[in-house]
Image (tube, rainbow, N blue to C red; front, side):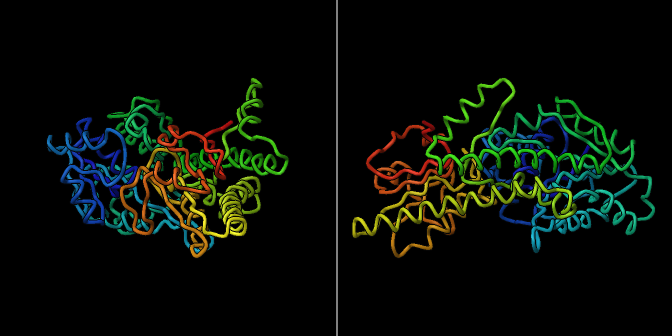
Amino acid sequence: MKACFMGLGYIGLPTAIIAAKHGVEVVGVDINETVVKMTNSGKLHIVEPGLEEMLQEVIASGNFKAFTKPEESDAYFMVVPTPFKGEHQPDISFVESATRMVLPLLKAGDLYVIESTSPVGTTEYMAEIIYKERPELRGKIYIAYCPERVLPGNVIYELVNNDRVIGGIDDASTEKAKEFYRTFVTGELHATNCKTAEMCKLTENSSRDVQIAFANELSYICDKAGINVWELIELANKHPRVNILQPGCGVGGHCIAVDPYFITSAYPEEARIIASAREINNYKAQWCAEKVKNAILEFELKNHRKPVVAMMGLAFKPNIDDLRESPAKSITASVMQLSDKVEILVVEPNVQEHSVYKLTPYKTAYEKADIVAFLVNHREFASLNYRDNVQVFDFCGTFKK
């Protein structure tokens, strides 16, 4: 089998590599020429433990090669971004563009799968685009939706071992897609229809968002009440049927911070809890930024000099380099508005260089700072001892108690 993966980002590239590792001849496609060149040279443009060695192996075996345009294959996978437009309206134009790129190559018996997180109805919409342009393919190709379920930093294991939900536009398409994923997935493959599969992906991440919102709301309450929220949650979780998540400085990434809007935009009257959770979690970043900014102004008034502030972390979650929708990044940008009143040291141990921020080693920043804001609980920070001679904002539980 020859498979074409449209999009070599955080999901498309690992999936393409693992498929190639399991014997599939893979064509990886990305419109970014730099990504294509790096990939073909055996270098990752993302951070993912163990993946670069696997990339080099599949390139050497001849099972994987990257291009800027698709090649005729037996299966095509749309793994491209689905960003927003306007007021959190989902934009599926990248999925459509990728679909149109492979349209001339499709032939009877081919498999077409969308993995990109998409609004309900996207798979059927793309099917109609295909049939409109290529009416002779109606009933002759297999079309399905199969969302990913992976944790950055553990992608290799999760792509292979996690269960997958697979929904075709008909039963034959579902079975054809299952046949492909069985080549490398050892987890269970759950069959459904494409609309349910689309909604399942959105539901999973919206559920996480709601649970995080509860934890973040507790952090607001505990701050006002003078209660250690980390201790409170630990004690509450001693109850056998309670499992409260940990608060943070907000919710980021291109899943939990985004997917709920795909539901609220389509069902605004019905999705009330989901919408409220988004508001709570979005507000957390603003709340954190105001805490730090107020501390800066108070320090300057008291000490008659600019404070040094360490912003610890930019990624959207611990131990990765992914800054998409990162609340830590937005908090840092907000604090930067006081640049005339403060020296800001930005820390992100998982990124070598940043186009906007000059990065400082985490130990240097921590030791030099008058005010420290822990925004992401990176593993490196665990080696730091709590400083009681400076103001520390532990928004992510680096020290917990």
